[in-house]
Length: 142
Image 1 (spheres, rainbow, N blue to C red):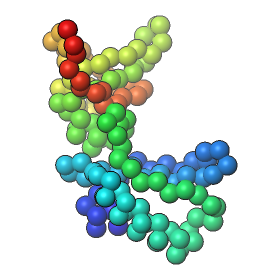
Image 2 (image 1 turned 45 degrees about the vertical axis):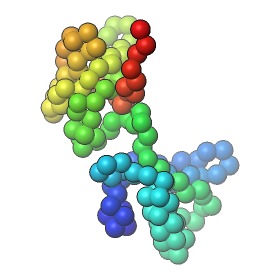
Image 3 (image 1 turned 45 degrees about the horizontal axis):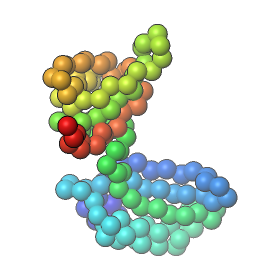
């Protein structure tokens, strides 16, 4: 169904929120996903799930974009984020997790290389990264 809509799955969540269960699809496509894309897929997948009675619990279905500050999880997302600003949290410091922001200039199986605003380059071992997400790139006022 995703392919029929020109979409790919970024993430899928099944969780209890308050008294309700929520099934959440995060989808994207080349050039970005819009409201109409999410709506079309939501109607179709909702109809299929209802007809199949695959999920016995009552639940809310949500389909959305991963957002402007999406978390980077898969190899495909890391490669896609190359050239963009990201914010990483990594372990390995005696003071606990450390945070670093910069432009992702290189991604390998073992290393991430970020370039800070001041031009300094920082190399991180991928296994030390505990979380990473896109960082909004708004111009700073002087």
